[in-house]
Image (cartoon, rainbow, N blue to C red):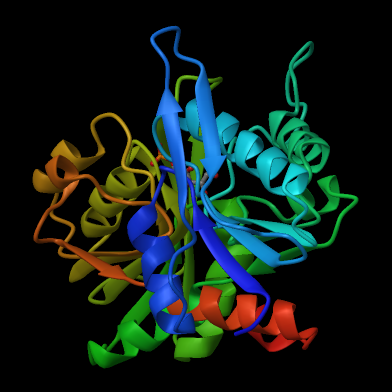
Length: 312
Ligand code: R5P
């Protein structure tokens, strides 16, 4: 594809390579060095003058270092006269800091948007944002793709009978409704309450009927797993026959994997927006690749074609 180049930061080279394989392109060459004083230096190792460049860098540990590496890459590409640079963030950094729900705090997801723009991003391509308002934090064009069709197509192959889609919290009810509609299944909602900033969620009520049914909990991300595993136990207590989950971003922070291993949850289907390090992998986890949909979006952005059917 003439004039198109894809580069990766250190966060998820395997995803960037899979995108390039789908596009039939070699991965752009760049190097990142970390000095003894922890400063980073990025060098773009090939000519990018007048090229349409995409940089793949989802947010994953070390989160803040990955963000800084991305900012340095964007700056280096602009200085090297790339015609247009798109930051590809399959999992958006600081996505949960998207509102001012306490005094004297930063809306850091908006700050990240400002930083990307200041570093030279001309556009942003992302997936399943934690909340829709994040898209409005940008003054440059931003496209939000969704992995819901990918997850639904996979769930359909599992031959679900008497299943019910369950929103893991009230905030997820709208997205869960999209799963339920696509799969032609009923919807139930778990009413989860989080007290303060302690990352601990507690289930309060259930709206809908789960008794004797196979439950599919859906959510945008699994972090510590508190939401998912509390909901799993609660649903089984309410008479569900089995519980599995379909979740876009496998953050799997802190105790998540240990909790998964000890949980009656039968299966966790996620995508590869974030890499899962070997110590966090588990036979209960199925990983679907978002590389084909990202490659399709990159092709359409490059060609100036519509992306709208990839948003739904
Ligand atoms: C919350 O609003 C999100 O949709 C997820 O439910 C949440 O981020 C998951 O966090 P954890 O796994 O730590 O409960």
